[in-house]
Length: 66
Length: 296
Image (tube, rainbow over all chains, first blue to last red; front, side):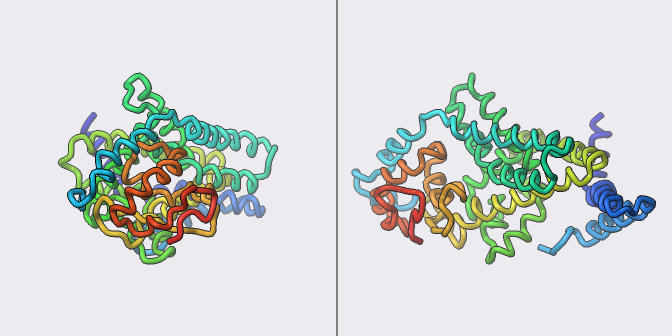
């Protein structure tokens, strides 16, 4: 159980931003697209979210470097 | 504890503590009302918005106001100012703090552990968890520093990794932080724009507000030391809108004083602060009113 917790914790601390980009920003961008009648671009919305997350992971920050 | 030996008996530290203690007894019911009240209002926004009773933008505005009111009730709990050392009342500290911090997505145990270190090492660049915002040179730097959110505390945990009590509390809080993340990511799939505008964005505004008024203004360009690490400052806002953080100085001297008793405490302790040469103490009005409070 401790090993599983350690693996999970390491994964989250390393990939937190990527998952957040994919799920959070992907869902938000998709909802905005649907609001503007673009109902068939869901996969692209989540792809943009994933790219935002990857970019944040590489840069180490979402917006400005501290 | 600098200058203690030079102060006359009339303004001794023991006498100062005695006066402070007289303001550290009252049950802080106002703060409980604010903490429980804002979190309940915030929770009620979800069904109201989802069922179309109020607009999402209006809900977002209310949620942002709730987020700005969310921290202080927890702050009182972090200092044990509801239980006042009574073990039977400790659940009030825990309940109020956990509940009110939902709006900000902050785990109580992480906040308590790091806040105690902030008091112990105020303005110490290596050890003060709030040093990043307190040392910012401009408002913009404060806003940029808040980007890190709760994740900045992971770096703090490395500094205190050998402090067992700190790490126990910190790790307990991390689990709550993880739970917040899971709930946020679940909600965003089900209610994307509601999650963005009722929770994520208001919490960000709340954290910026908190960093500016609770950390940056009170500690801006101050040094280390009991009577030096916090300052008096003035602002165009009536003090009720910035949570009376002009009085934060007295909180750092005596954290047990209840927030709503600070004005009276600072009036009573004014001669002690003048005797110790605290900058700006002469400008404390005899009666602390709404605004202007203290001239910088």
